[in-house]
Image (cartoon, rainbow, N blue to C red; front, side):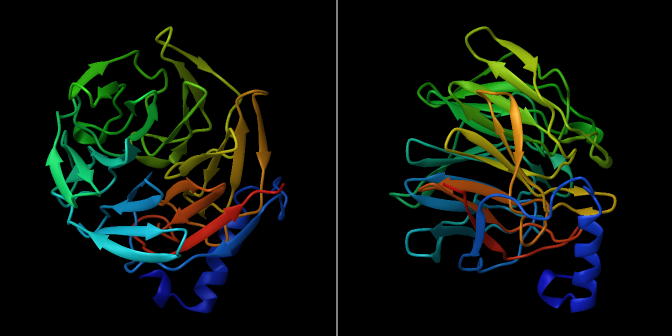
Length: 316
């Protein structure tokens, strides 16, 4: 059942369930939410990236190949050249005004090593060097012109420790220090030259959600554990606003999560914010012009879909 076809009673029951997930969290927090133009299609388990002031939505659980492009300045959607493969649980990043689609699951739940680059200027795709470790439900971020791909699920649904770095200048991947806590459905973000891997789950089970927050320093090739995510969850999205890492959404056995929590690397502390209006998992997040855009995702655990596009403006 899709979000649009769910009855008001079912939606109310789902909201009650998610509010029970974090009884110690306040119902209100800092910041405000507003609605952006809905996606043209309902999806989940997508990849999202910002490049050149546009937000790109790639893939989806039902094998969507349409590349949907959101212009936050004009609050409107368009489409680009279809992605090269039907994929879900992939990662995506924007770098040098291009979009990179990394890994994911194909043909059901087969982990792939495929990497493709999209050029918005020419509206075309080209294949790039493959991931050394095929995987889906991974996460990726950019530090100083290189793409860091972390974690995920490999063959037979088991977690991998892979942490691999792509240099687009030479089209090559290099292995770096393994992630200390192997996990999938995690979020990663980069702040001040360090990589933060947050949340996730063990071997694909959202009954085994994690609150782990680990930081990687490329200069030393070492990881360290930091203050945990206040609400253990997976299937989350994250983006950086004003030097803080905002972690949104997720799923667990009792429902989807409305929690929005931000991490300050300077103080190693977390802060709660106004809750996500449409709790969901398998969603994407991107920052543009000081606002957080949270797009698509499933409103109930498992195979569910939405066209939601909700915009968070932090408190001054």
